[in-house]
Image 1 (tube, helix red, strand yellow):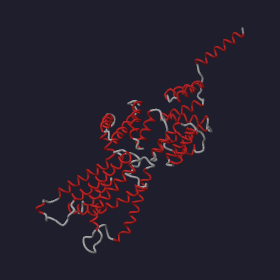
Image 2: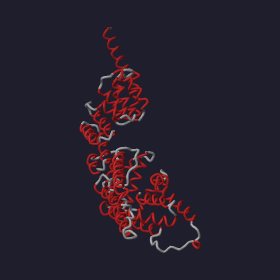
Image 3: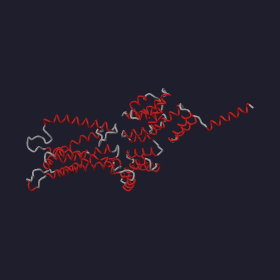
Image 4: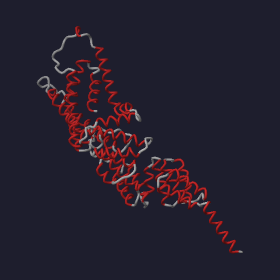
Length: 457
């Protein structure tokens, strides 16, 4: 009789375990769903594991990861406090806390927690923290270490960092073969930046076929694909893609957001011209002057000619080097093409305005200023150069600073910055003199600053 009761008890125990799984079984389900990136299901399974055992640490760790992946920082923070009480010395706990601090915008504190912690996830978090504080070389090393240890996200982040550093070909090599729409979008963008436009178009078309139209990455892929088509000169497909994009994004608002400063300067310039013209007396009451050959219209024409020739040179060079008509607006390629625009424009402006450097009379001061003030001007120039270089260095490391038209820290950019001085005879001599003769000494400096800014931007 006893053995019958024993067998019955065994069957009852097995049945209870079958229909009432414990925390380990729920955790196994949570792990499987998390590996498949089914985050909602993984979250539910981990929560059931914690219902079965509120102090089951593996499920608690994984649930914190799920919340961090989903961006639920409040829930992640609450669970992390519980985890720190249960396993304060656990290395995985420190890694998760570092991820949380990083998401909260505290990369230095995150780095102090994981700098010497081993493991793939810790190396990946360390790379993200290094990147956030601007230590790109250490970040790249940490990402590569994490990728070798099996952290797949680190390989993607390494490619993104190399893209940010202006090395798209190295980023493509780091990324390798990819699957999934989000990584196809990244690869397509890298191919576009590297100048491989047909391959970029093919990759982005594949990504669009796999993405849901409600996915935000769908819009990103469409925008990049439109640039690729237009860069290839395929205006038909570019127009179709742009038309599809216009149904998702306000293109006019995007254009205004990108060019608002230039457009504001143009509106102010037109307004000043209207105001200045309204103050001019009728020509019959003025003495007609014939000694000023360079009028406002002629100076504007010279600046416009310099601008157009510079633009033509930049577009031609972009097609010659990258087979991309829009290379001046393509990351990385723009750092080669845009300096050429400024160099050619400055050379043309210098050639057209060179005659302005001759003094009007023998022994008169140079039109650019008295020799006695050159030393002071030199120090001002050095200060302005330091400000430009500092801004260029910071703009590549912080998201809140706007980009510069070209990078003066690169050789071609430094040459373009030096070449801009050739435009001074036109911008500092011809332009102010013509404006002062037309509108008077009060408005001429404002006009000159606006015109020079529009020309250089």
